[in-house]
Length: 454
Image (cartoon, rainbow, N blue to C red; front, side, top):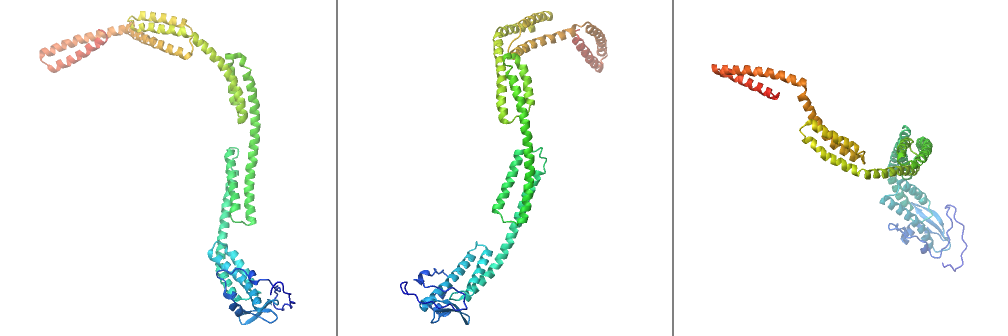
């Protein structure tokens, strides 16, 4: 029937099926969905004849087992067109069943979702307004539901394990946050603590976004603990930085006054350096004023000190220039002082050194001081060498020492005379042993006497 032919009156739908009356379409083939690769054979004319029939008034029935069930009417077309329409309804359901089977076989889809779709298709295939082997579709769906049942249980178990794991991981985050809050927060590095808490919070958000959904009660309980721990740390951090701001303000005010005092020393030049050093000690004791304020104030404070030290540097340069002739004079005195070591007469050596020392002092101070110390050290070596010679001479010419030496010499001379007599007697008697002992003792006494200068 074409679209230009007049429509016939549509008879009422039979009472048993609650199916809407189909309307005549211009081309039944255009409305038919593309059958899947595993589409049932009921789409053929033979299958349609096997599972469906059309009465003279256009009522269409489907065979289910040994009984026939009315599925609807198609009064405006031929019997073949009527069967084809309801076969396409069957093919639609069969296509959905095949697609569901393929999804189950390919994996990746949730078994519980597939089971819900299978249950929906079972309802759709039951008393469906379609012509085909509906019982076979229901058996396929029952088999699919049975196989999905075990997978659904496994999925539920895996989901429970994932939830338990997520609860454990989130609980660990809460406990770490609570451990941070339980520390003595007056002695922590706030930069480090803040970084730790931010890391925990990011991990919490990642678990919320990517992890399994927790029950509302558990999720709220864990979040409350985490939030309370963060609140404790945040409160302490705000208090710390508030106190730090007050301390910075106090230090900033104190250092500002020190800068003004340091800058006021500029007219004093070198004489202001001791006062500047005292201000520097106060600066170190003033505490931190914050990096930015400290840097700015220190730049001014240092500039004031640099001005004083620059004045001292100019003075030192002038003094060093004036010290040139003095250095040459002392170098000449050092050359002259070398004769002190060569003078054998200690009294004359002392007189020469005393004259050099007097001329040394008369040259005046030398700058830089390091140069003066180096020259003084060279003269001191000559002085110490002469003093050592004087000490030896004193010990040697000390009257008491001489008296003791003379007494010792007398004793040694007596002993030597006695040993010479013993040696002569032993040799005369031919006593070699006694002669050897006397000779050794005699040699020792003579050595002692020589050491005493006898």
